[in-house]
Image 1 (spheres, helix red, strand yellow):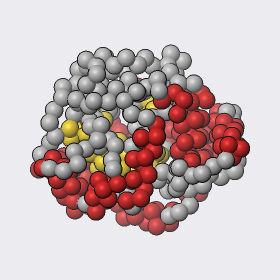
Image 2 (tube, rainbow, N blue to C red; image 1 turned 180 degrees about the vertical axis):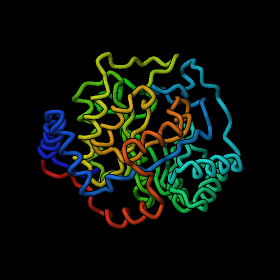
Image 3 (cartoon, rainbow, N blue to C red; image 1 turned 90 degrees about the vertical axis):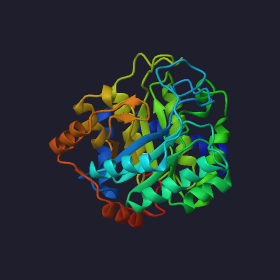
Image 4 (cartoon, rainbow, N blue to C red; image 1 turned 30 degrees about the horizontal axis):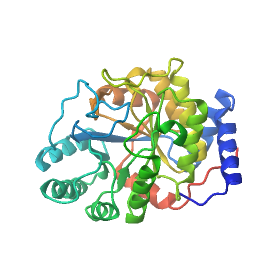
Length: 340
């Protein structure tokens, strides 16, 4: 995190709040203007997220059905073998995905041994398929981050989830600073940072602004920002916000686009509960990636054919890997927010 004075922190939060509270249509219009300056408005990156080790996590994240603290429909499973992971990656690529993310329900991955080596092997082999490689395995130390980077991992996902103030109501088994420490290890290793959060968990508007403030304070800001809508799963203790609707998701995406103009904003969990019109406005507000596949780790996701049909209706095309490489070169080192 950057060393920011209290005055500057207050100024940043005030700026984000001003943007977030713009009139709804003005906000979307401004976000689309900024989006078109920095991204191809005709393309959306298709990503695939696979749970390679499900359930049994010792963390107590109140939203997560994979936590061992709660009795949920999720059945704990051992880590997949590499061949099975690669088969899934090949299918994802055939379906149009250019990004393949592997998630494991750990507080942190094993530091050595056969399981850890299989993670490095899976990263190398997915990379050889020509896919962008992302992993989300929990907290990392510096050595693990460096070894994952050397194995070919392009992005490491480690979400902040919410504001620092609301975080303690969501999880008690690790701190906000623990998360920031892992993000620092990821950045120092040379991997790109994938970091976002979840809305609709009962947080206040100030908490949403607080989350965006933390993301803007990361130095440099995250190249990838997933925005999730909370999905309630039976057995987890957290209850969804009663007043939440799709406009909250759209407003959050638009504000993120204005504050982080170069980041890829990933429309993530919760799409199953959104209409196509709602999702369309998310793209208009600056989202430029979505996850295809029947599941996002353990929660349901729209069918891939339905997603492709929706994109076709909107005149959007899946990004190609070559286009992504070009965008990375064009956008390197320039992700500060624009005045509006």
